[in-house]
Image (cartoon, rainbow, N blue to C red):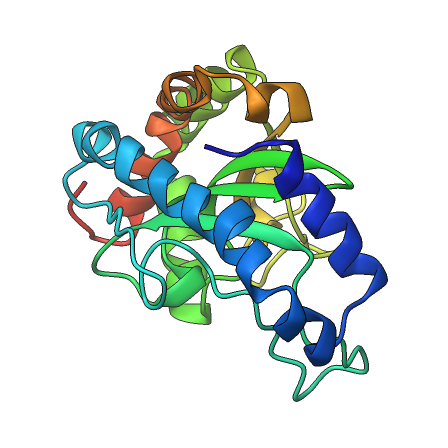
Length: 223
């Protein structure tokens, strides 16, 4: 699994974020970052499938649950070529890329966290979630209660004004304003490096299952 060398590599990459340095240290990346990440995915796969058989947990170098280290800088002013974090996603098999409902693990020197939900849903999906929340608020409230009990907080972007068609006095207006439906819980490096990290991670994901079920229900996806 991950070791202190994982964080050391990420820290050095932050200071030397260029292709020549990365190529010279490719072996370290494989040994200290990618290999332990793939091992973690393999270890977690049965537990992820137990949470929902609709979630994917694929230990592949490319095209699986481990997100690639290269940044897409085509439309960004930041032209650094590499991400300085490890990203692992267990997304719904019927969804598209990072915009699908899923579980997420983020490991970086400036903060680690676990997440669940959906990031930047497209307009049709966003409208479906809002409509479901309007018609069935109790299910969403139960999900929030479970998340709060597990130490998670809802984060992400929100509108400054009520979305079209919803009154500012709506009982769920703060939630209806959301453009992301993501629950986040921070992790310490000590937790990530602990021998029982995989077991603890699955236990943490348990607290997000009401939210995941609700979002999939809203989007007419099996869960």
